[in-house]
Amino acid sequence: MRLSIELLVDALEQRFELQDRRIQQCPPLGRPQLYLDGQTAEPGRLYISDQPARELCRSGVCTLYVGGARPAQHGGCALCVDAQIAPLFNAVQEIFDICEDWNRRLEQVLLRRGSLQELLREARTLLINPLIVMGVDFSLVAQDGEDELEEDQRLFDERYNALLLHDALNQDLLYRQLLDRRVPYLYPGHILGWNSLNVNILQDGAVSHRLVLAEHKRKLRPGDAWLMQTLADYVLYMLEPEQPEHQMDSRLRNLFLRVLSDRTADRLDVSRQLSQLGWSSEDEYFCLVLRMPRADSGGATENQIRDNLKRQYPASCSVNYNDNIVTFFNLSKLGRDFAALSDELKYFIRECLLQAGYSRVMRGHDNLRRLYLQADAAIGIGKRVNPDFWIHHFNSISLNFLLEEAMHRLPDTMLCHEGLLALRDHDAAQGTEYMHTLRVYLDSNLNAVQSARQLFIHRSTLLYRLEKIREILDSPLNDPEELLYLSLSFRLFENRPV
Image 1 (cartoon, rainbow, N blue to C red):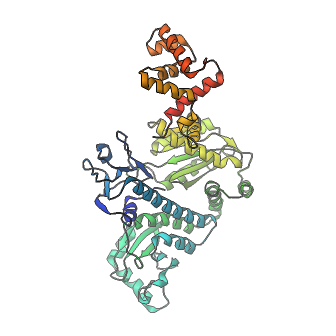
Image 2 (spheres, rainbow, N blue to C red):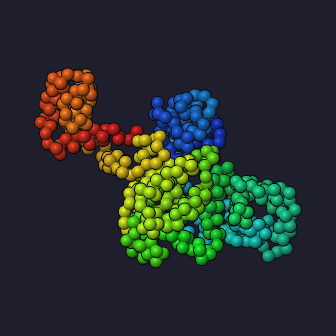
Image 3 (cartoon, rainbow, N blue to C red):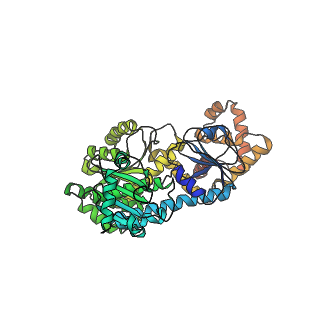
């Protein structure tokens, strides 16, 4: 889950002293990363640094400076925090954990087909203040906490005073003008007696409802707008009418959200329900993970992307998950092969300014979550390995994935060929180039002539080096399994986390 800079500032100032802040418009931010000197700073990233760097002063980049550091120049978002790196890093991670847990609990209300009031009750664990969902005609849809307001300040009360408030709001020019707003907005308390943060909810292109956060127990904060916009998306989903033609899509979305988010889900029950909806366990599937462009890039919205995919490919289902659009395609129902479908999708992905990760094609319901993991790994690793590419296939990064999974358990120095460490130490101590020589020799399939040509050395020099390498490794370099292990060890070094 990505968070707004305003929400992060609100949360951080509860824990630390913010000595300076330069808040500019920037896209939603992902989890923090420690900035290393010379690293390329990416828009939409949150960095923590104890040194100034021009690279961090780019538009869309947000940096938390610690240890007395200050931005090198104007540009980007900057917060100077009176803290050490480790406590600040842990605190920011905890803020992300809290917000992601909040978002998961809202998702669970949808998955179990809970009520709007349940949704508002869960939302108040972070928003604290009373929440109301009302129609533009002042009809009450759901509320949690309105009874905590003073009696003469309640919008929905059997007393005559509530009707007077409705009438006063209808006649208020500012109230009517704000019905056209498409972003969260503050409405002052000159009529109601309490300030409110509001989000207009649109159905079929027109405002139909309003989500209201009443300032009561706690002062409204700038970061509340981000939480309210997230909550409004869930409210809209629950307000959508379950017409017969939409019921199947709704059930499919709920099932796929369950597949993705609920590790304890009864897989036999999920399989049975998918089969009832015409998605057989004998069908072939593949998964596409789409990452949205920056908020200021002018690309299509999430709703437009999901709707477009559904129109073009009826046997598909798209859901929002972990800040991405995850789409499952039933190739058997579509009557298409993967090559033709992926060739069509690449134009759509490019036009919408998206980044994409492709899974392999697999058969059966048990593989659905695995397909998502493949597609998610493809886009995550692919963006690091080939940052200039728009589309990343799991088959292209599967070796990198294998190596990174191994290094989640042990570091590269404990996984690699032990003799390679001795070879590296020899190079460092003696100034030799035995590591590079061995790597070229292995990549050349043990072809000495080709290796010498690539290294720009005489063949006899190469043979001399190889003899020394065999001595240090204590190996004749002729066992296929050991040669494979050595090749993988080189790639482990290359794939070490930054």
